[in-house]
Amino acid sequence: MGNETWGCGGDFAPDEYAVEYRRYTTWLPEFSGPLALIASGPNRGDLDWTQRFFAKLVEKGKDELEKVYGWAIHYYCGTSGAGQAVDFTTDDWYSLLSKAMVMESMITRHWSVLGETDTEHRVKLVVDEWGTWHRTGTEVHPTYLLSQMSTMRDALVSALTLDIFNRHADKVAMANLAQLVNNLDSLFLAVEDQFIVTPNYRVFAMYAAHQGGQALRTVFGAPTRNVREGQERWSLDRLAGSASKRGKILVLTAVNTDAQAARDRDRIARGFGAIRESQHTGRPGYSRAQQFFSS
Image 1 (cartoon, rainbow, N blue to C red):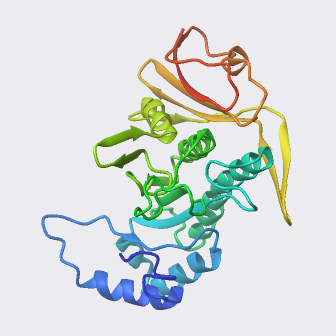
Image 2: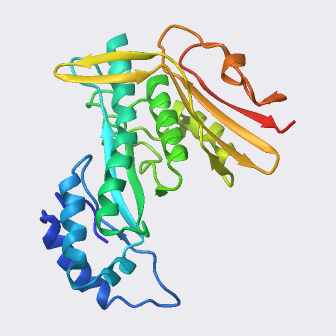
């Protein structure tokens, strides 16, 4: 219901938007059945927007929560300093991956704030815009807006983020890489009759093995790396991932965030019984899906 209402979508304050949302949804036809309505949530980590919207929405009663299926969050991360989409240092590599991991705290913190009003957690999170957003200069064509190139670094941002969504499947009901072709970290680049898939496409193709599965609690024990950019500080896991199960097939995805050192795939898979690999590489920086059959 609207888009980025905190800014370009109306420049509302959260309580103002809550009033407009309640007014509009009251008289919205259901057509052939109830609609699943998604409210325009905060920019990045603005917890105040979440708290104030829902506090205002339920002023006339908690039944108003039935009008909200999802709470939309937007989060992009990009390169700072002198680096660009395809021209970056090892420090830039780690800082961008660290920024991608901020998604996890955004989900847990907004979920906690939602619980202050929606104690039954009927409203789910919808991360309907996310990914990398680099400065201009690498467009696939000079006339294309935001058609930046992508590299393995962007692919790992996608992999880390998809794993975060898997780990929080109870909270995130829907998530969208908003751009598909020739825009930000898209899956495809095209100019006239020339067409190519991006590294992000490869990640999405691998992670499709999770579709239709049941998310499993997954714990990775690995060293962390301290990352610094200006006044910002992060602790980046050197290995992260997620798992899901569909029938007798267990799918594990793992991301090696180290820019140089490889990770032993057998150590990642320890304790899962018989292994049949769908793809494998020992090179650093890759994420690979592996299928595990119950013993």
